[in-house]
Length: 413
Ligand SMILES: [Zn+2]
Image (cartoon, rainbow, N blue to C red; front, side):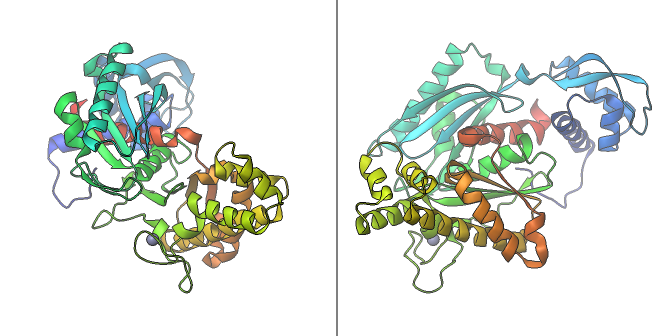
């Protein structure tokens, strides 16, 4: 939540800033040594020693063993290695989706220690669903024997539009909800700090701080499922935009003529071409036109996720299935090329539907990106699958807490 500011810094703010730099050095370069952290942060070894002593006293950092370090200031001399004590603090993570939510406990490394999945009916009252989430969180804290003062807070990644400043889910098209005060409802009973944000923005933060994007400098996470969204992290900063709307890649208009209507009110949006419902709609149409084809047989078999059946038919050589998947991968590649032309990120990470079918989608999307982005920029961007697989959402929810209330804002630790 750190925003750039032209306000001056007082001495306390400087201390918090230095603490942040040390914690991030330990997160990214573990194990590390005092002189190495001094090199990384450009802080004096005295400052580093004071901060590390404080962190050791709080049980957040430990020393183990002796290692050689041949950095700028410490040539060849043995140094004691420092590491974060990952299980010294915990984050509660809630991934809130359509008719399903997960609750997990993560440590300071965003490693998921416990995870439970629950379902709910979309006809249930939103308030009763969040009361149930509160009860389940309390139950997990008791069952896992977690000391309350070791819990940094609760992070919620929710689909749809979320105002992270107020913790309100302002619109969830897929549930037909609007203005759900998630943060207030949870904090009434939990008495823990609550951070609520959009689920894909949360995934981007998770990947940037704890996954493939560590030290990437700039990263865009693109997630496809019922909708298509993205999260943009530049430096340690999640780009939100002036009205919290940055990253709405699903509504980038690709087809300016004859595009299909999108729930946002426009036509021809990326989401109408590369979301899971878009692929399934095309697969069902092709199956109707060719009822004895492999794709129709797969879809009519009834077993499993329909997008999986489409990918399976494509892997087994069904021409209609291949065409549908390759066309979606092409449009995704076009959108990524537009993204690269605009932001030139170091890394693009894909999640959800695009990793479920990554063997089919990634090669075509990558080639399109290479061919389309200006001045060869597409060849330089790293395009990869999320480090966390199906756990990307829950890791992201944990990362909301770990970044906003620990690594980037270590005032209260
Ligand atoms: Zn749209």
